[in-house]
Image 1 (cartoon, rainbow, N blue to C red):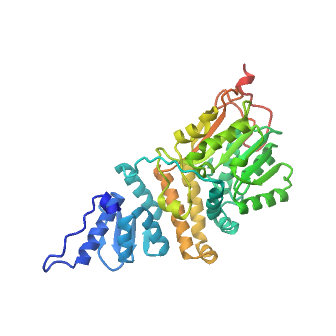
Image 2: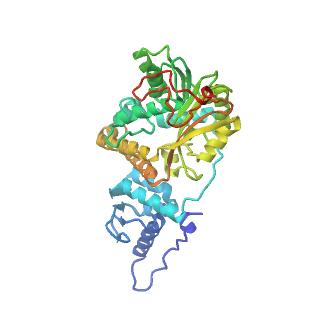
Image 3: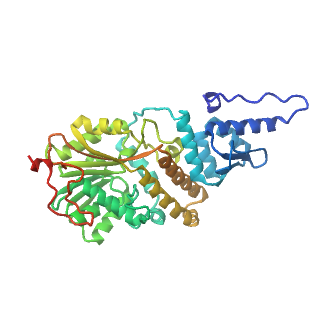
Length: 429
């Protein structure tokens, strides 16, 4: 069933004798139907050669221009996917505040109940996971250097103050993870989904731990290994090009930043079993950092199709119930950094826009438009609350080495120095 049928869109009546041309009637009806689908958003929608619909009230956030009538028809059939495809093809143009427009649409759809809860149960084989990760992360390190921070951290930053730079905020995020994990010199850490290696190297250098980090992106692993060698940390950090299901051995801490979104709900228990084996029944602890939802539903279908194949942002219930509870891992702390991710994406998007010409030279105009839309839409999703960013700290249920309060000093000082302080609950008993 197409979207016009779902939303009660009824085509205009045939031309009456002496009345407007049927094409004009259709254009006006179709444009109005699209605006109704978007909700009460102050946006102007127009055809390049045709009618112009003004916003419902007040000044327009943006003007959407549709350059071809076939694009208008496609938008009626599947607006959530065709909007993005038309944008990257240049058949649809947005003049004005793209982030503000998308944020207003997300808020309107949430308010109207357009985004109904839908549960996902798909699974990814190791080969499927590798292919999906390759499509996104192996497009070239030079591309990511254009708009990420100097350490190529492609996850939510943590801004101690709004004036912090992106580089400062990414270091602050890695410090935050280390404090939450309460790392001590000499401990062993396993990281699943390590990106370009910044966190693993940070933990090894600043906390004196030994890290084994897994990732299935070939380009990221190659870069991480080269950096570790260059910085004299090869004996403290091992980068393994393999799937999380291949993780073996035990450790004092387990950490995964930005990988759970790629696992798939049907494989949560497999990930949980790995974490359970790593931490055992001792004093281990772990942290999951992931994009999530307040209620279950799939990722935006256009982003799934064009940018992040196979990705799914879980709710807290799905993540905790699927990954941690089956292996008796208990939650110690949960923090939502949603607005920090919106700020991170704002930095990324502005850097990307400043180098858009370079991106077009590296790839082509459609690639540049696709990533511009992806970064803008993601920022809007976090601003509107459509997406969340969770950090969940956990430990084996039988372990008592946990903070007495949130204010209990940790083993990791924000200045970057590790120490022997920070007694856990079991030291109090």
